[in-house]
Image (cartoon, rainbow, N blue to C red; front, side, top):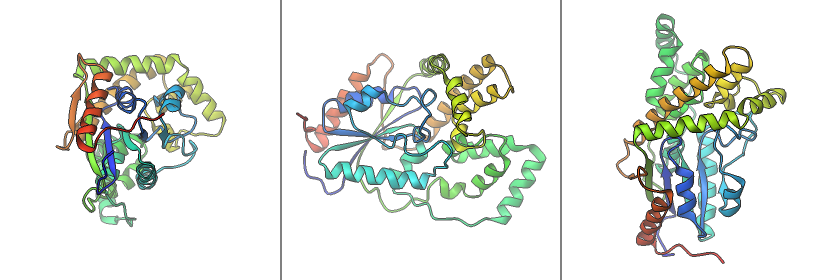
Amino acid sequence: MAVVDRPRLVVILGPTAAGKTEVAMEAAGRSGAEIVAADSMTVYRGLEQGTAKPSAQDRQSVPHHLLDVVEPTASFSVARYQELARQAIGAINRRGRLPLLVGGTGLYISAVVDYAEFPPLPPRPEVRRRLTAAADREGTALLHEELSRLAPDLAEAIHPNDRHRLLRALEIAGTEAGERGPPPAYDLLLFGIQRDRAGLYRRIEARVDRMFAAGLVEEVAGLRAAGVRREHQSMQALGYREAIACLEGEYSLEHAIYLVKRNTRRYAKRQMTWFRRDPRIEWLALDGQSARWAGQLIRERVAARWGDIVELG
C-alpha cells in the first residue's frame, strides 16, 4: 500500500441490523485488513445472543479487536474505549495492514475519528438542581428523552428509570458527547450502510426473533446465576434489560419480544439522526444491492486512495 503521512482508517458504520458486519467481511476479504469493533455492548464477555457479535468463523477469517474485553459486571466508558481503539488501530497500521472500524455506536466512533477528549468533570450542582426539579415535575422519562437527544448511545446504556445515572449523565452530556479536539488523527474514509426504513425494520424484527429463539433469556438467566445484576451497565443493552425484566416477572416473554423490537426500531432511528450530522460519510444503500457489492466498492475506494490492499498468502 502507498505510504501516507497519517495512519489509515476506514470506518463502516450504520444503524443496527443494516448489515455492517457482512459488508466489513466483504471489504476485508483475504486482505491485510483487520476489524476493530465499535459497539458499546460487544465489549462484554458472555453477551452473545443479544449483541450480534461476529461469528467464530468470521473472527477466524479476519482478525477482530475490542470484542470480549471486560466482564459483564464491570463498567466501561467511552474514554476507555477510545484508548483501546487507538492502540489497536495504531498497531494494525504499524503491521502494514488496514484497520476497519466497524459498528453502530456513534459516540465511540466519534471519540476515535474526531480525536475528542474526555476530561474528568466535577459535579455541577446548579445543573443537577435544575434537572432534579424537572424530573420531580415530569418524571425520569423526561431525563431519558433529553439524554437520547444529546447522546443517544449514552442513553442506550442507562435504564430509563435509573434516575441517579440519568442525572449524572446529563450533567456531563456535553463532555461525554465529545469536546472536539485536534483535527482527525487519521487519514479517513467513512462509509455508512443504510436501508429503507421498512426493510431495516423487517431485518430488526427478524434479528430479535432469532435472538430469543437462540436462547437469549436462557443466556441472561446464566448471567444472573453468575452474579450479573439488573443494575450493571451490561444489562442495559437492548434485549438484555427486557429479558432480565421478563425473568423477574415484570412482563411476559411475548411482551418482552415486542418491547425489544419496538425499542430497537427507535434506537436505529436515533442512530441515523446521529450519523446524518457527518457530511464526510459516503452512504451505501443496500436496498437491491448485496454486501459483496458494498464491500467491493469500499475496496475500490481504498485502492484509489492508498493503492491496492496487499493480499495475504
